[in-house]
Amino acid sequence: MPDIHNIFIILALVIGCTLTIFVAVLEIFLLIFIWEGTWNSKSDKRRGINIDMLISESTGDASLARFQLLIFTFVISMSLVLIVASNQPPSFPKIIPDQILGLLGISSTSYVLGKALQTQVKTPSNDEPPPTDPPPPE
Image 1 (cartoon, rainbow, N blue to C red):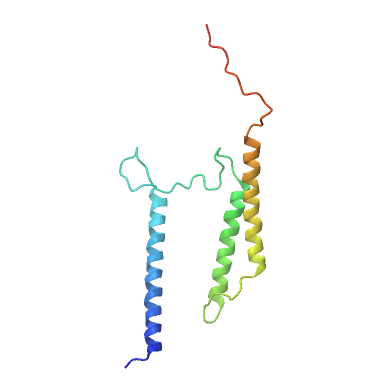
Image 2 (image 1 turned 90 degrees about the vertical axis):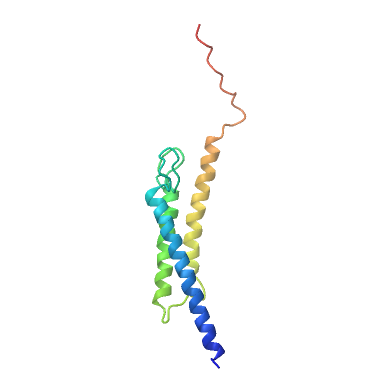
């Protein structure tokens, strides 16, 4: 009779490999959606993931807060991958350092405050009269 401990090790490996393959296939499909921009051959009905305005505002202007959030997220996630891979055997750290969480918090807060200030500037105040249309030409 096989040892129950070995059965659980094999089960954990099978589940881990299955999840890894699923995530890899999902990432491949996301990259295809980004690369192609469409699964449709009809150019008038384009679907997909458009990243043209990834770090831009809705007006098309560059956003420093979005760029900072994107860079901090990539740098911190790659640092965490390096920390996990450098452990012998590779394992997730028991605690994530406070500095990492602080950097992510600062970056996210600056993005949220930037968006809040941007919406405050764009909304008209109630004191101003509504704009009037010019009279039609005769």
